[in-house]
Amino acid sequence: MRGFLVWGAFTVALAAFCFRRPQPARIFIGLFFGAMGLGIHGALIATNPRSYVDFAAHAPWGIYRDIGTSLTEPNPLAFGVFMLAFETITAALILSRGRLVKGGLLAAIVFLVGITPLGLEEIPNLVLAAGLAYLLTQEFPTDAWTMRRRRRQSTSPRRGHAVGAKAR
Image (tube, rainbow, N blue to C red; front, side, top):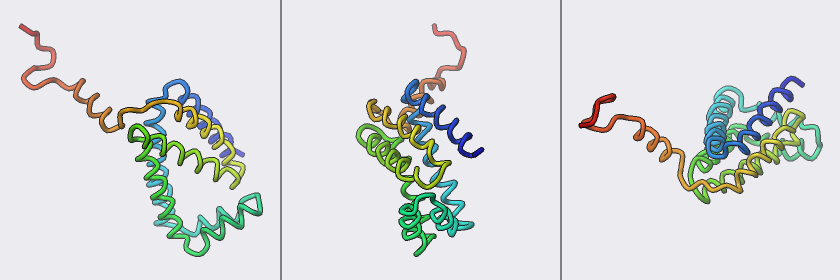
């Protein structure tokens, strides 16, 4: 129950962030998906790929148990690599621009809704999916890397000008 409450509070805060500040929320979500893909799935692949099977086997709904175990049991390592690639690619799309962002957000929504029946702790995914659905209504003409580069250029001193020097 504690995991449900913690994850629930996080998803509510993140969904609110999506509505209040869509651009920074989109960047955070992209980085979050990247961290989850590389960090969580990377760690599971390296240490215990069988945990994918165990997670699927404990799904509360029989149909999800059956589908989950049929996908993970034959080759848990391959499933983990697929999940790592999926979440990392989704992150890159979300951090991209234009239609690519929308594709990444849609993939993230389908993923979040799709894994919700795997357990009680996953139910707050629907709240986060709602925040991402709102982001689908926004325009993101600039990718995260360009935004970062522009921000760094606007805050760094220009060549030939010392910081704090007076113009003549």
